[in-house]
Image (cartoon, rainbow, N blue to C red):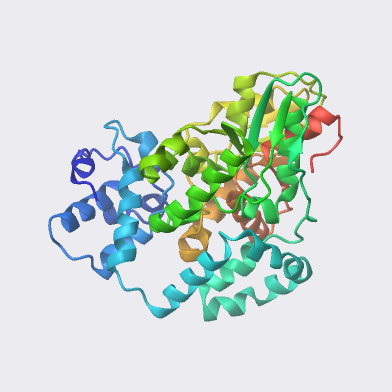
Length: 413
């Protein structure tokens, strides 16, 4: 934990109303400035107690406080350093260790996720029925059963290269991701089509692997660095210097590669530009014709897109430019939905409360469709709406809405 970063905090309290856990519980030690106070205690010699670790674990890492802070406190760096310290110094209970081991042996590995596709397709109703029993055994297992998508879309094999339609304006790489690639392959297919229709040649390396986001955000920097080096090497071999990313958490992590890695690897990472899909399309400017899409759409700000990357206006600009589409804002849009990478698996009670809160705000818009730019948010909000008993609200990625408009489709999907 960097003492200089800690001392940047003047404890003004501007972060308090933006912090999801402070909003839920009103506890000072579960606010950013409260956690920074605990970090300072630890740096000054106080051992890392289970109570301190609990307050750090309860942080979503949503970065809303970074957006709100008038002093420029790098809470994002501090919480990553602190999580690494917790993993080094704190001895977790056996059940907690087992769940974390399961999560990190599964989710960063696309082939292992792929093996779950058929069981998930067949077990949707069963998982919902057994979730209450699992809750009594282990809340994290119950959360996994509740959150897992079903039915999972059929697998889509993307080519290594998608040619630009018409005049080629650019050549870009595309990250396929772990959860996005295996559970939401239709999002990647739509992303490649939209880029091609806007004049981009899209290069999709077949063996990308995990970008390291889940590991970095969970106090496992060495593991994250291994994934990062492999990702950098994959896109170097592909011969691209710009990589377009359609998952908020992945994009925010890849933009930090030069800080995560050392020496030559940091230089190699710095030579590749990472850019969010919406960010890139707005920079590029529209080329393909937008066909009408008569829909009311509520746009959800994924935390690692809005707060970590500062990408807020671009997705709204792209959606608002579609003829016939009405864009509606969600109340408390800056408050996290509770997904936060692995948070909804490791802190299921708090995540569920935040998910239910977000679902209520989404339903209040009366929109036909919810648009989200992160697979974790999609699963989290879908599960929360289902729990509410309200009529389902379909959730799509910005890329899918654009894809439907550019192709002149009547529905998004």
